[in-house]
Amino acid sequence: MALTLDLNKSQQALVLNLAKAGVSEPPKVDVAFVMDVSGSFDDEHRQGVTNDLLTRLIPWAALFDPDQKMEVYTFSNGPRNVHHATDVSAKNYAGYVQREIIGCPGYMGATDYSYVLERVLTDFGWMTEKPKGFLSRLFGGGEAPAPVAKPRQTLIFFVTDGESADEARTTALLSASQARGDGVYFHFLGVSNQSAQFPYIQGLGDQFSNVGFTAVNRVRQWVQQPDDAINQSLISDELVAWLKAGRA
Image (cartoon, rainbow, N blue to C red; front, side, top):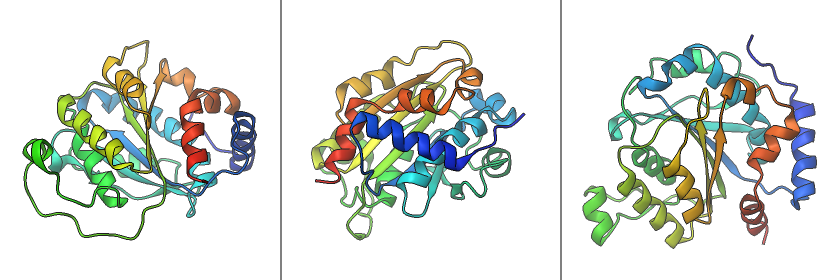
């Protein structure tokens, strides 16, 4: 049976958990949800598991995002398989994956992280210039995106069940983002039905001060946890410092 959300209860729990961690006044933050739609994730999408995972993140959007929603991006391999889906919120999360993600562009493809990260950074206004030097050769040419208004802090939940085929490009992209001082926090969730290891994205969490990692092992059990347990697995000292920096 699909999870249902008691938004008031879950949001109150998140507020309390953040306060205990030192964030008494949560800043306004744009929230995005990035979902892997590679072939290996098909069963979890069709069985509603990823929809349950998405449901558990709705309180974060309701608390932080000014519009109380998450912008949703899907990806598999290559730039053409990055898709900006319909926003998700407490109003439409039920059946969202079945309705909006299964069969989307790139569904059942392979796995590249960098192109969707590049798209999200561009859409939220952080990546506004064409890369130069090594990054230009790595990323390819093309016109620079049009400038946008000064961005708001951006929290990106990145959900995947497998390692990326473009690790060098992904690492370079995250390194450039950190060097620019982007107000972005990338929280990678490595999802497994059992106890898989995700050494690459765990390593990214160790390497970069604005990248976090949570292992979502035995995902069917993980999504059934109480609010406090879910929140404590996502609220790190690093994320708390990032949230506080946004209020400085």
